[in-house]
Every structure is written in structure tokens, then in C-alpha cells.
Image (cartoon, rainbow, N blue to C red; front, side, top):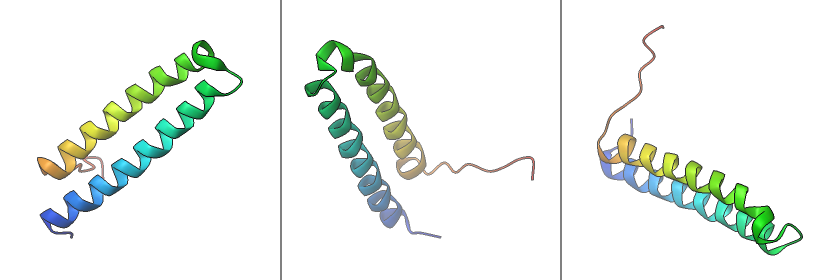
Length: 72
């Protein structure tokens, strides 16, 4: 098991790396051939996915709630 501070640091680094990748991808789509209006649906998806990623980071690392498989 990881310590609390290690879990926060690892979760923050992972969430930030995913955020930079996804935002960079959305930026390249919007400034490329698709243009702003062509990339807008992808931006909506990106915002939704990043909100879920940051919520999961908050719930897992900050609050310390863990997911347990109740079926197993």
C-alpha cells in the first residue's frame, strides 16, 4: 500500500499528465483542419472527461475512499 502523501503525489502527477495530453490533443484538433466549430464537440468531451478525472483524484487521493469489488 502507498502512503497518503505518496498517493496524493502520484495521483496528481498522473492526473496532470492526462490533462496536458488531452488538452493538447483538443488544441491541435481545434487549430488544425477541423477549426473551432469542428473541434467544439471534442472540447465538450474533454471538459467532461477532465471533470471526471479530477473528481476521481479528489475522491481517491484526498478523501481516501477506495473502491472495493462487492461481487468477489
